[in-house]
Length: 305
Picture 1 (cartoon, rainbow, N blue to C red):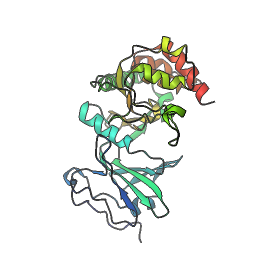
Picture 2 (cartoon, rainbow, N blue to C red):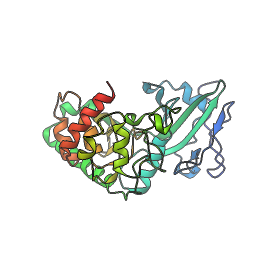
Picture 3 (cartoon, rainbow, N blue to C red):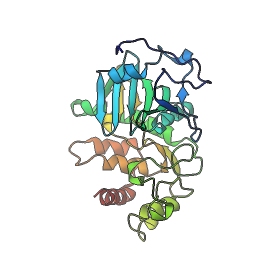
Picture 4 (tube, one colour):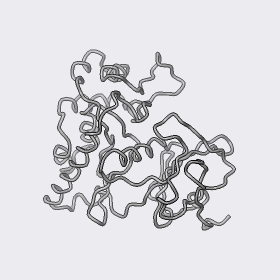
């Protein structure tokens, strides 16, 4: 079959049919905020959705590794797919576009397929954003441009954090955290290491972390924080500066309802060895939580060691 065969449009969003005929079995779920599979209404599509074959044959690879592959397909689509892709990332983008006025890629399709042999592959078909990631040119920006960019990000994150909390800590749809620090083997029971939530209170979240860390200290330091919707991976590589001058946040797989300090602490942790001045601007983009960051940094290094 040619890699350049025609695109295809799903018959309707209500029918929840897949984007193309396939020998793989499509997976349907209703446990999240958005029933899966999800397909945008045909009128929202810039062109028909690509088939699985076209996606697989794309040679325009933007990123690959760790069970994930991101490719550009045609002029309008980017597709993230693989055995370790979570459709929650696409749900997060749908949720953000519904609830607050910040720029994220449009999501056109979310679906999973069980391929022959039992391998499950998930697909996120989204809008291609014309622009460059911030980490590619941060070092060449003037102080004024860095300040303006930081102010834009501050406004975006303030809007995100002002979304009314549903009263728990976890992913949308009251599901477990997908941030790596909360990872637990599926076969483990709650009595043997399941720490991924969701949690009704911050104390419960702390208790889960304490299963891997300090039971006595953390509850005294990490307490009384509001549950706010957070991106969860605020790094420059996930901030696109569009050709139109607007910023767009991408890579929403870690997003969810986290304690208010989490976004700042994780962003500072991801600064690494602080080889440039990005960390100075993080303090202007987000409210600072220096005490919480110190404990977060120590805890994450301990958990990942």
